[in-house]
Image 1 (tube, rainbow, N blue to C red):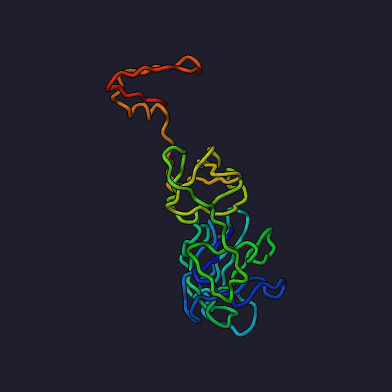
Image 2 (tube, one colour):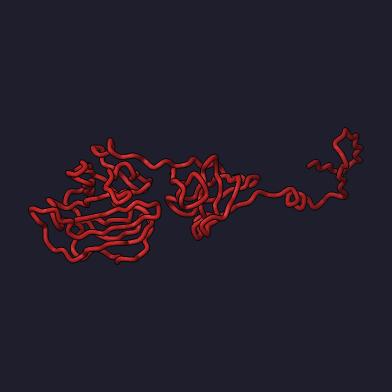
Length: 265
């Protein structure tokens, strides 16, 4: 589930296999040179940053950047502004990290980004793999093309349940614990989620927040809040005179004297 490489999405041309093998996107205002962001975590595998001209013919990408993502997809952003790419081949990038500035180099008719997605070395329709995230906006004319990333509903804070609090934006949810498994949505920053199981996979701590819903603690992306145990509750009651643990379930008659307090767990 990739994110669009800019914050405001205005699609000017869609995918047409073997004719136009990507989509063209400009910003909210025609001609503005705006930041380009990585669509997902990954590794920079190709960069061109020295193309200075806008061409009237040919197939040139102009300046471009190509990223290998951890989910097996590869993305390419082209027609970037001359000398605006701020990463180099081999760099690791995170989703939403700025990598360049929009431009109109190569075979381009105006300031925009040409955005391609590859799977198994074949060019795919980017709209099949790219989603609108909460931090992004889409123009009303382009909304019909765009899918919104699913957001997993949160719960209220509850000290009697095992919970996690989310500390970052766009934390990924997968259908099983492990980086190789399918991403199916995100959880929201500063929200709480009950968890029911936990595992260690791919050097991350994973938490199960529902049926086929797993999130990984990447650094400090999650705060774990464990429910209060019965012993902790008992320790908070400090003024009792005695306690009696019954040997088996039964019916008991209890006599209380004036001024005595009965605590029942």
